[in-house]
Image (spheres, helix red, strand yellow):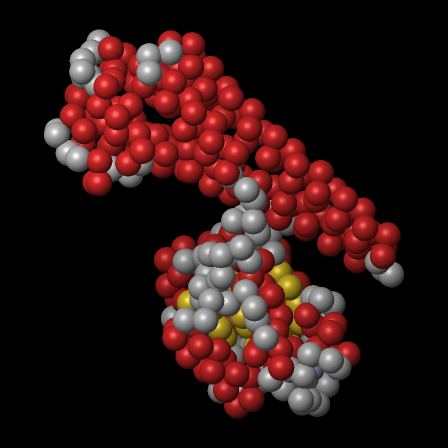
Length: 350
Ligand SMILES: [Zn+2]
C-alpha cells in the first residue's frame, strides 16, 4: 500500500486517517463499486483517486513502482478512464464513452475504473443516463470514483449509490492556495488606510489597482500554463491523445482562472469587511483588543468622528450582494469603485 501511505497532500487528521484505512480495505476486498470523494481541491482529489485506482489494480496493492502503478498515477493506464467536462458541463454524449469503456473485458484480477472529475459539472441528462450504468454496470469488474467539491451539488440518486468520503488537504498542496495573494492584500490595506485618512484620490483609484493586480496574477498563471502545455506536447508519444489532453487541460485552466479570480475578490471583500467592522466597533467604544486589525486602532479612532454608521451598514450589505454575484457578469472594478466611494462619503458623514 505504498501509494496510499504516502499521500503528502492529505492533512494528518483522524478523519483522513480513518477514511484512508477504509479505502485501503476497499481496494483489497472490493466490497463496493461506487465511490464519491469530496474535497476542496480538484487536483488533490484526482491524485488521490489515481492512487486508489492503482492500489486496486496493482498485484501488490499499490506498490508505486510497477508499470500499472506508474501508468495509473500518470492517468495513462488503459483500464482507467478519466472523464471531465470538455466545456462547462458533462453532457449526455459523454456517457457513451463511459458505456463503451465499461463494456470492455478487464484482464484477470483487474478492474475497469472510471474517474469523473468535478462531478458537479454533470448536467441532468448526463446524470440520469449515467445513473443507469452506475446502478447496473455490465459486469462486476466496473468501479466508479466520482470527485466533487460538495455532495449537495449532485443528484441525490447518484450520491446514494456511492460510498462517500470527505477529504481535507494540506494548505499549500492546493493549486489555488499556492498563488500568493499577499501583494494584493497589501494594496487593499494601503488603499483603505489612505481612504480612512481622507485622501480622496485613493478612493478613486483603488478599484482599478485591485483589478490590475488580479489581471496580473491571471496572466502569470496563463504563462506558466502555456509553458507546461508546450513541455507536455513535446514529451508526448501519442499526438492525438496529446491534442485531446491539451484541450481538456485548457478547459480546466479556464475554470481554474475563474476560481482564482473569485478567490482574489473574496479576499479583497473580506479585508474591506474587516475594516468596516473595526470602524463600527471603535465607534461603539470598543477597545483595541477586539479589532480584526488592532494596529489600526489609533488611525480609525482619529478618523471616524463624523462617520455615518447607516452608510457603513449599507456598504456591508452591498458587499454581501456582490459576493453572491461574483463570477456572474459582475463588473468587479465598478463594484469596488462604488464601495470605496461610499466609504469615503460615510467617513465624511455624508
Ligand atoms: Zn504497483
